[in-house]
Image (cartoon, rainbow, N blue to C red; front, top):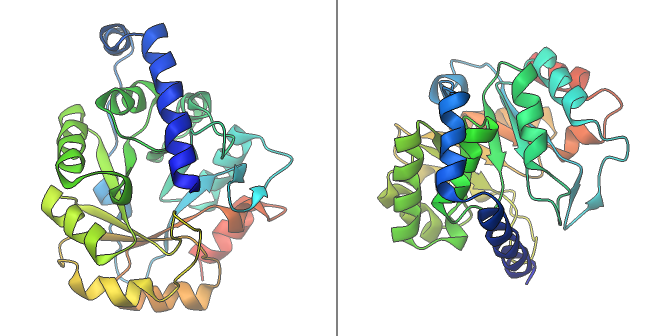
Length: 260
C-alpha cells in the first residue's frame, strides 16, 4: 500500500537527518533564532459565514502525480496570503509530494499567516523540526498512529507551543483524536490506503464531534456550493491544494472563494 511505502521512505530519511543533526543540536538552533508560533485556533475558528481556507503549496501527489509544473513555493504562498488565506499548508515530504522543509523556512520568512507542516509525522524530532523551520501547527494522521502515540505527539507539540491538525477518515480515527485531546480535527475525504474518496464523510462524522472542536474538511474540494453545504454542517475551514495549483492565478482563485 502507498501509505506503507511513504512511511518506509520517511523513516529512512528521518534517520539520516537525525544522524546529520542530532536532537540536541537541532534544539539549540532555537536559542539563536527563537520563533513564537501564531494563534492557529483563532485563525481557523469560523465566525458567521466567512470562508476560512488553509491553502496548500503542493507540487505533486502519489494519486495525481505532478500537479504544478511551474512551481515557485514562495510566490505561491505570497499569492495565497494576498488572496486571503487563513493559513498556508506546506508539503515537506520530498519523494511522493516533492516537498521540502526548506520551502517551509523560506515561506516563514516572508509571510505572516499561520503555517502548517504537512508531512507524515510519528516522532518528536519531527515536531521540533517543524518549530525550527517555522511551522505554527503540524499534521498528525490518526490512521498511522496508535492512540497512545497520537496523544504523546499531541502533548509534545503543545509543549513546544505548536497546535496540531489531527486528520481522520473513520469513526475509529475520530475516537483516537478525541481521546488524545485534539482541538483541531481534519476530516479527509480521501482514504490514504487506496485513495478512494467519500465526499459524504463530513455528514457521517461531524454529528459525533464535540461542539468545541475546530473542524477542517480536506480533499476533493473546489465547488463553492459544496463548501457552503459543509459549512452548514459545521465545518470551520477547508484545506485545499490541488484546486488552486491547477489555476493560472492561485491567489485570485482563492480570493473568489473567500469572497463567495
